[in-house]
Amino acid sequence: MGPMEHPDLDRTLQHLGQRLDAIDQKLDAMVRTRHKSLEWVATLSEHVESLDAFREEVRALFEPFVRKLDGIDEVMRILRHATSDVSRRIEAIERDDLRRAG
Image (tube, rainbow, N blue to C red):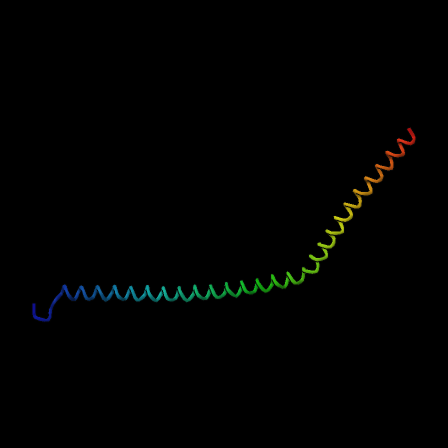
């Protein structure tokens, strides 16, 4: 074997070269995956912003209805109290009529 021949060193260097190539390929794949992930995040962010805008539009659209429903709830509450009051008065009148008749 001459001074320039080192089969173990050559094999080791070749093996290291192959490993470095494999590492480069994996790093490239990771970078592509990262870019794709960032694209997905950006897309999802756009969708979230779009949904937020839609929610605000819906809220603005239904706000008058909600106010009307609140008003109807208040009217119903007043009617319940009024009905209860009228019912008590009718019962009182009927008791008085029964007392007078009896």
